[in-house]
Structures are given as C-alpha cells and as structure tokens.
Image 1 (cartoon, helix red, strand yellow):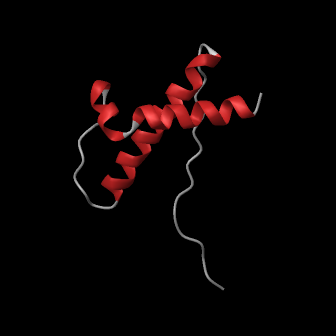
Image 2 (image 1 turned 90 degrees about the vertical axis):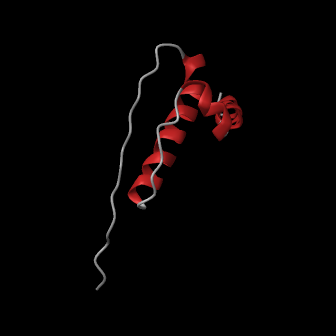
Image 3 (image 1 turned 90 degrees about the horizontal axis):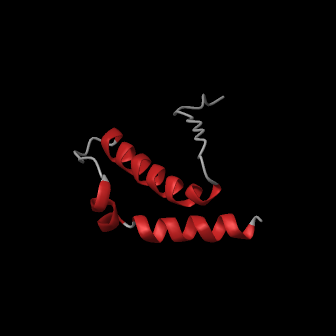
Amino acid sequence: MAVPTGTELTLQHTVAQPDDAASTAAGWHLCLAVAEELLGGRQVGPIIGRAALDHGWQQLRDEYQTNLDSRR
C-alpha cells in the first residue's frame, strides 16, 4: 500500500471588511506561488506592493471577486 506524501496547508484569514476578501485572496495566491517556487529550489524574491501587479495580482483579484460574487 502506498503511503501518501506531501504537505497539507490550511489557511484561515479573517478580513475586516467583506470587500477586502478578493484582494486578500489574490495576495495570498501570490505568496503561495512564491512558496511553491522556493520549495522547488528556485530563488524568488518577495512579491510585494506594486510589484504584485507585474505578477498578475489584478487579474487574480478580479477572478476571486467574480467567484465571490457568484456565491452571494
């Protein structure tokens, strides 16, 4: 029988305002993408502030917003 390997991460983040949820999710998405790169042995610097826009933050935010809107 194969033994499962890997790691499971559970992330909980409470936002002060519901309107902040999509932006927060997009930020975490980029943070986890950087973590994945680092775990794969690739050197990646932090993606913070306006630099996040160069890594697709706005598109991610819009997609998360669309998903959240469809659940209301």
